[in-house]
Image (cartoon, rainbow, N blue to C red):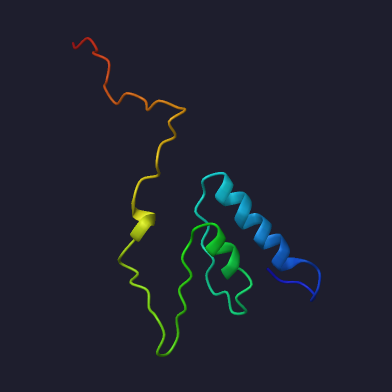
Length: 89
């Protein structure tokens, strides 16, 4: 996001993060140089990873929680994966 200082760019992105998380989307914040979003990510139950020389690291081959299927809500029963029988020729 680009814009003049003080126009609400960080506020807009924070609101978007919260809105996306509320709808079940897992937002990723890559390259937060000023840590504007670290508190929001932690409040949403996310993980903040500091990377750089001599600091943490990321294994791009390990999907972690992103590789797991989302939890189903108890309010909506899961659809049956069974196929209905069809007449063959």
